[in-house]
Image (cartoon, rainbow, N blue to C red):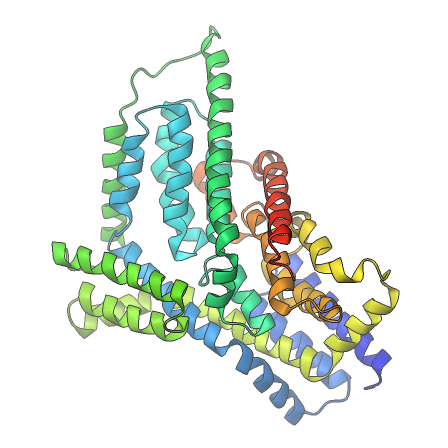
Length: 454
């Protein structure tokens, strides 16, 4: 059962079954990516001892990423707890001054700031309730709000502690910070494009609302009180904290220390002076010491954020089994060789670019886990035969897909955002899908022109 043909067939079956189950969404990714490849390896005739060896191979690739994710999620969870970003969000709401275009631009800025923690759920929880009253007062569409937040958060998903980069890092065995440093020029351009898209949507809303005001059925709301909306946002954050039942130090020196600590972490990641895993371990330890009194409050904080941290860590550890089996058995190599034998010679060197260009439609058909853990390994191995680096292949798939993170109905965080905005998924996709696909094609072609996909 360990002939090249058998390994190809079993490897493809593992990928297909894994993707199929993940798309159905009825089983946790940790379960799927552990049991399916394990069963495939046993069917191929490998022993339980070999299975342990394959897992070890995979674990060596992902362990640093797992540690980084655990402590990055806890660190930014603490910063959300203590309201580090609240003054900035409040200031941005006030800065809109009730102007429709400024409200759209402010939404982009708030979305970018809110997604610094890399967690989609917290981004929607922070932005939608804060901005929906402003949009209602200005008669702006909630779908424009969702679109701008989705694009802004997706661009910030290029951060090393966000899900896509972490998943890609575990596949190509690269440091997430190194991938981020490689992506920084494209992320910078993308952030500018987010504001451009937001401005255009704001102008479109201005024209639509101007037409709406001519209708005899239009009901104006008078002057928009952005000061009250900003105050309500702060009050809602405090009410949420009280509901969760935790306290923290509120002295000015604590806030200043949090800002310095967060900036130091970002600088260390950009410069590479210290790897991300120990950087976030140290940063989290200092954040616990600075913001919470005594071991009881610190332990409670760790327990509060442990579920989110362990959920992502579990997926990555399961990916160690998935990738370990595909690599250790040689299945991935045989799949790539089979693909090379049928691909036209002219297409082979560009397969990662072709898949990247289709990244947004693929996002509507596959989950994030399926895309990075099933599609990327095959593309990387195939493109590698033509001299394309693992980083180049991963960059193409990340840039081509990442802008659509919060358009896909397979994103649980997006469903939260849809619920908070009292919106409809279909209408959100109809507005946002064409925008993000054009967006992704532009930045992918730019990355190609800059030589980032080699």
